[in-house]
Length: 74
Image (cartoon, rainbow, N blue to C red; front, side, top):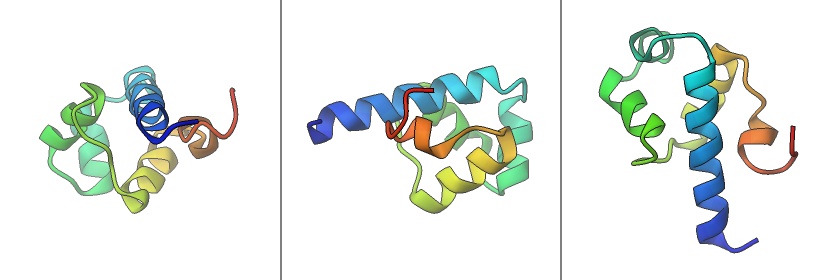
């Protein structure tokens, strides 16, 4: 998979998982120690989190990092 396509897949899946988490942007931001605007940027596909931030997000919202990274399909 080409790098640009993989990045878009990651951003799309992360956005979906954030939206489907049932948590507000503020709750997620507070839980991982970032500004709420950053969560909004992730949801709008404007930014990609660092590996460390992605790990924290997955832990907080109960998402599977392998799915977000495109390593699995579910």
